[in-house]
Image (cartoon, rainbow, N blue to C red):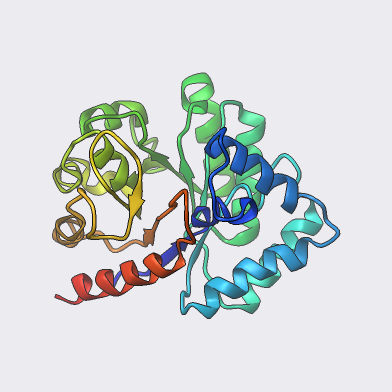
Amino acid sequence: MNTIAFMGANFVTRETGSRMPAPGWGEADRVTNERFAPLDGFAGRFGGIVAEVAGLGFTSMDVWTAHLNPAWATDEHLEIAAGLLAGHELSVPSLAGSAGADVAYFRGLCRIARAVGAPVIGGMAPVLRTDREAVVAALEEHDLRLGVENHPERTPEEYLEAMGDDAGGRIGAALDTGWFGTHGYDAAEAIKVLGDRIFHVHLKDVAAPGGHDTVALGDGCVPVRRCVEELRRIGYTGTISIEHEPEDRDPIPEVLTSRERLRQWLEV
């Protein structure tokens, strides 16, 4: 069975009282970075989320870049984070967040990914447009893969174009099913087209096309069960990360509901 992971970005509003601030995601990201950056107290803050995720029964967690960011992460931060993850027996399938637009930031992500044992960096990757050759070199140096996450891409063909060639197996997809739902495209059909370019999966459901109001898996417009069936059909054996970032409530109850449904679908 595929490993089921908890997406660290599910905590996007944790530092803003489980409410998305008026400026939106970027402000919640900024506040979270601001809270986690000081080394003094980092062990308590990072350890708190790691302990919570492990306590919920997850064995895998995508580390969100607002919790561990190249802009401020020192060797001490990385040592603490790696120790806490290991201590709670949490594997890290990906470092999740934008891959940035410059190579220096991307190389910083590679450093963090190696430190926490993440084989994939997953996120939107404008840096591929600015210096693809350097990105590939960094991936090869650190023995990592880049999973490009779909946001603006409306079809799998647009998505494949954004990724470009696979760079010897180093560049593929960190598929976000929710964004295909937002664009009104059948995410299960997208999986058929993407096939073995899929490195990692953010399984997400949204209430309705045209918006990005995330809901528990199976409660929205994304055919998530068919997505799981299609992933099995193409032989995908990687991690499936449950992603749910509601803007007005604690995501945990619905994440647990989603996990139970996902387990049932995987067992069919």
